[in-house]
Image (cartoon, rainbow, N blue to C red; front, side, top):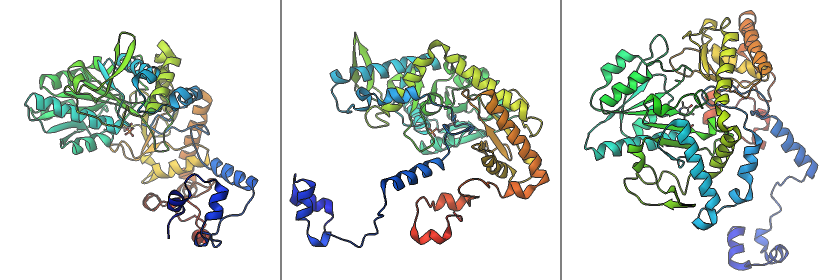
Length: 478
Ligand SMILES: *Cc1c(COP(=O)(O)O)cnc(C)c1O
């Protein structure tokens, strides 16, 4: 039997809906479909109630470390929705999209200023894709110089995308351990810095929320070895307007616009990672490049040494509008973002230090990692679940991998002191509960629409819609 769409295409042309209905053959007219027959108000209530079961940054505190779940001002959404931006067709001629090109050009200038880099590509769709671009550029750079380099140095605190990127680019990862102060171990780094190292991928501040104290020496040693320094700048919240990664010695950096520059994320995209590079790598960036010729903006498809394209058209343009709007609304005050992010993190850390173990006792940058190892195995998971009963989204847990029972907390700059106080008091109460009434914490959450999930089963076999045959399951099992 043909589908109604095929039937439509072939035989009905431009008929009205009513005419189509009259012409439909009887074998397409089925009355055995179990379509719900309910009123509008019931549909509205159903979906409104479903939406209230969700948790987002507009509902409550969301301290998910390394993810920067900060509040994204709604004005940035309004800007991205402007018809002149949202209604653009990517095939429009350059004359018709001068405003969009100008916005991209200006955003590149702003990000150059923020990172200290000489050129920026807005094309990658995410941090991981930006890393892929950076490593690809590094390979092209060494190919050009006729140097065979096959390895990347990555500290053991790094985000999983770093070694994954190296693997995809066929670079062998050399893992450097973290020292007792939470820095990449300098001695081990020196020993590993052999002539076949193409790239050092470093996150600064690292995923422990700590500033790499030896960053100048590391960059210097790498450069003397002919090695490129790649900065994972997914989280720029500690550095904005305070220091520039290029001045620390990095040759490349990626930024996640969907973390530090106000694009809502967490629902799976779209996002935007951008890559900044120093001038000697600029010719390798993807095409087209937006350039300014007198007062006109043009798309330059000249390939030169470009590694090609990493995304269709010009990247995820809507995210670029949000980031531009966000940066413009801060202007030269953008440093305050970082000052408040770092202040909030240190304030929260000082409140929690007595109840939770701190592996590296230093003041932190925009986030910090505490450990619940004193409360036993699996305690981080149980504490995270119990936090839901207090109305908070849990922090990141079990990352970075080098801290056992890790709770990685990033309050971000947008939270008030009252919220931080309430969160700290919830975590302190749980620290008491876990000893006094372990069962209460181990079986949490108790107040959410669905209780404790089997995490593996929930990830492997997600059950995301109502299904009559599972009605008796009550969705409780997964
Ligand atoms: C989020 C993050 C990434 C990956 O970025 P995606 O946009 O999720 O691909 C890489 N490194 C760090 C430190 C991150 O926090």
